[in-house]
Amino acid sequence: MSGADSNGKSHEHPVELVFVFVANVAVTEETEKALLRLKSAQAAAHLTEKTAAPLPSGHGNTSEPDDPWLYAEPSAGYVGVSVSTLYKYCSQKRIEYRKVAGRLQFRKSTLDQFMAEQIHPARARGDSTRV
Image (tube, rainbow, N blue to C red):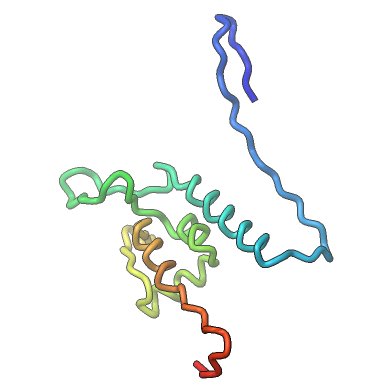
């Protein structure tokens, strides 16, 4: 949507997408994957400076601006798990994190790497080997 101000210049208005799910409707695997990608994209879009937690300059802040430290809630949303599951992964040392002022923080690149490590190859047809 766009409009014009008093000077005749057009400006954009943000558009929010809303999805409504109806009970008892079959969802194909392809649709489910598309919704998961959309959820990840929406979570990534919410990773703003408000959720990033950079250290003050002069305190070892070597993180790149495009690889911010994120608090647990937006990190869990990005990965697609609950906050308690993310805490469990930390206690099991399955994911890298830091703790500042009692709050866990995660690098976005670490979350991407963690998700990539969760991909398991599919078995070929006719392969009866059990895993």
